[in-house]
Amino acid sequence: MNVYDFDKTIFLKDSSIAFYKFNLKRNPKLAKYWPKQAKAALDYKRKKITKTEMKTIFYEYFKDVEDMKGAIDAFWKENDHLIRPWYLEQKRDDDIIVSASPEFFLRPICDKLGVKLIGSVVNPKTGENLKENCYGQEKVRRFEEKFNLDDIEAFYSDSYSDDPLAQYAKIAFMVKGDEISTW
Image 1 (cartoon, helix red, strand yellow):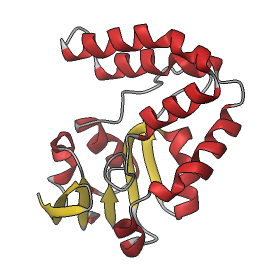
Image 2: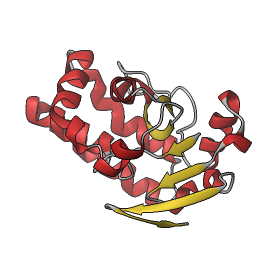
Image 3: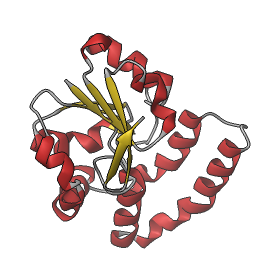
């Protein structure tokens, strides 16, 4: 099996940020969350809060997304073309996406691609992270709950924060745009 990060790896952008901007265009009143989101990002960079806490604050805007399922469907209809062509050319049925983005949000595109998904468990109504954000070492822990780490043939990511999971792959690749090089 091959394992992939999602954001900026097989998807051109950070999907959580793109979804926020998409919703902001549809409902400009969501901008009221921006000051709190910016403060949370700064607090995270200063190590005052965890990544999970920062993400929960960022996702609070979910409370004001009236039709979450409709918003997600519309987002993927408009943005599914941002899946990188190189991935589509090599995609296999046993691929697994392991992402820090919310699982409920990535589920439709992963179902469309026909691949398995491990993502952050987030309440779509409140934005609360119900488990630790699926990032860094947490990706390893979450992967191990469902699959055997020894079965990872290749791993692809755009970030060395994924090194804990990359270490289990027979070969790992760093993705920068459409350029892929060995880890």
